[in-house]
Length: 442
Ligand SMILES: Nc1ncnc2c1ncn2[C@@H]1O[C@H](COP(=O)(O)OP(=O)(O)OP(=O)(O)O)[C@@H](O)[C@H]1O
Image (cartoon, rainbow, N blue to C red):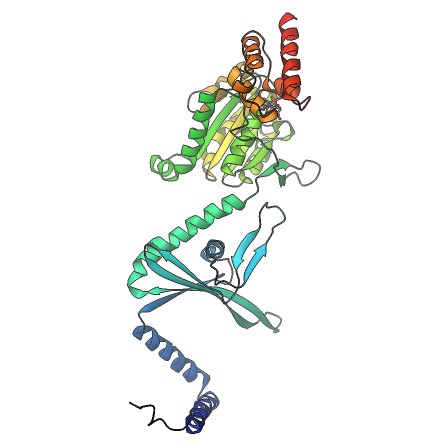
């Protein structure tokens, strides 16, 4: 070892370093100039392999695509790492897709992100590489390939591949669902005869729906269980779908409940008006065009003449040119029902008694929900939503409303209409009790 005194003078060290660098550069130039490209590549890859054998770390490369199709894992990592930024991250990217609510944050290239999973340190970096290829017109085309490098200790290979990467995928799905704006799809009958979509801005939530508290809690648990049961449906050999029939008078919240479910699950809604659908094959085309994780709603099913009853549907020369109840049931229950996953189908009707028994048979629509006239429980929810008052704050008025609702049949929509007439809770409640009294007397 050199002692401080025995070190050569700095000038000598600098000149030695300069000559070493020059030699290395010279060697590289000679190698690139004199050796064939294949041999240079072989030497380079052998050095890389040797380096990795000696290194205790493994690096996994995750490219953005395989050349043709996007790499789902790359996209998931991109979203996932956006939630793992640290104070040492200096550059991020922010994106706001037109149809989404929130900003999407991702890391920029060459930013190093460290994540810990089961005490394993996982180091990520996003890199880019310029690719050159000759296209069919013999032009040289340049493109950029992005890829993540994920490094960790070689001994954790099993855990990283079997547990950490699935964890990244799952978390990214969750982030995507949070970011996603729920969309409402309707058929554009004046144009393409196909689905067109807008963002569903319906504010209904399970908190704002006025209905029997127990029933509401039960429905919420039911949808929660449904989305968790992918493996269950596979195991029992059933398509992963659930059918709900919401019935009750107009203005009792059937559509609002659909919106509340969609907002809760972040599922898109496909609103299908069967009166506009010409025949069974059109129905199939539209239903197949719906995406997974969606709610297909067929409102006022009793008003859709063709599907009210199966009587006579096989008669006449034009039986294939119309929409029939059998066609619809075939989609709900038959082979078509297994096209797609995580589907909820909701039928709504104001007249359950008019529906064909085939539609009501046990097992067909899994859950029947009666949406009834406003109950006292429902009123308390509406008062809290519209006036922000609770029972104990206006006990006297609440007691009058409670007694009135036992005698008068009014819908939540009617009560909501009365509650919207002013801002002063005292005056609004006085007017509401008077209005209920008049209804009772009439
Ligand atoms: N149960 C409810 N809870 C909260 N708000 C409700 C409820 N029912 C009705 N409303 C209010 O009334 C409006 C109309 O209700 P909605 O369209 O959901 O009723 P519907 O039962 O689907 O009616 P229709 O049978 O005519 O389609 C809603 O936008 C909402 O403001």
